[in-house]
Length: 168
Image (cartoon, rainbow, N blue to C red):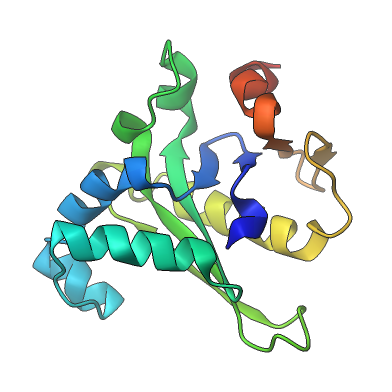
């Protein structure tokens, strides 16, 4: 979905970034796992087919996809490289385009070492918050949920300053 192509969601444990072509090689590597194929009801794809899927998801008006990054690793990175911080993905599917309040969220924590650490829970909560408020929250705003979790919605150039927002 083009709506989130310049949006980053910052949480305590995870950072959600739009699924771009830079993420495809690592994503493709994950999806070679027979276990993940079975759990996600996916068929094995070639790398070229995976690039095509990424492009189609970016253009689709009823899907919103983010890659889930390990926030701790991401903050420690000196540059914008994200591949080594990838843990999975989270998707929002709009099930009724006439009623944008209806949808389905799907989370996959593909990296086995990242499972059981709360990444999936936080990714789902960030996605619900984004999906429910995206029409009202301009990029760069920060919100605090009832449990004290801070989530910053950063867009465009603000993404470069995202690491600083997480460290505050």
